[in-house]
Length: 262
Image (tube, one colour):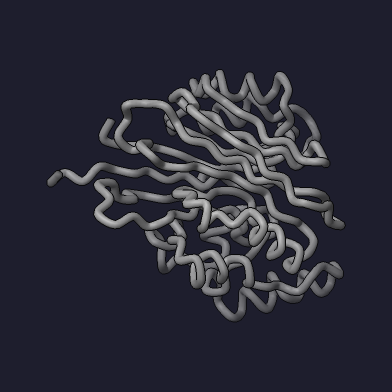
């Protein structure tokens, strides 16, 4: 119990995004070797695929957080029992659909989970202004959520070189008639609420495609950490797991380790 391993992944409703067929076995083969203690997922349904996914990963305690639009449901699966949980939906629906925040506490003698709150969300995919309203309504900072994960559908400015940003993000979005790239959500989370971006904390110099978590070559999936004073646990590693096109996102994987001098 000196480590705790967790991840977040958009599972694309357990359908291969290229072949439109079941991606369950492919995802299990990719993810199982990482031996997760907890995984938070987006775009799942409360169905047999969700329960099978959890059980095959050895995460036999799992919860589901529905949205008005079922494809945007969130889930958390854990190696340890879930003590309490709640699901908050946005107060009204947006053009991109209603969204939700699923949070929980675990019931275990594992020292990492003591009094920690885990949460997952999937923010709007169309409009940064709507994403801002959603995350402000969820208000993870004032809820003292310790580990805040999910598909934020928002960019981080210093992830990209100027040339990559202009060619692969700005021009692509303009050509496709998508929204312009904004950074409001991630700046709110890190600059105002002072969450730590786990991946950037471990990989401060990675840029461009090296940190892509979605098929458009950008990073929109995150694990955020609420700093604790005198925490006996440190973030040991954070990396991106290549899902090999089994879904349209890569997973973000973090390892926490107990300090040895305590």
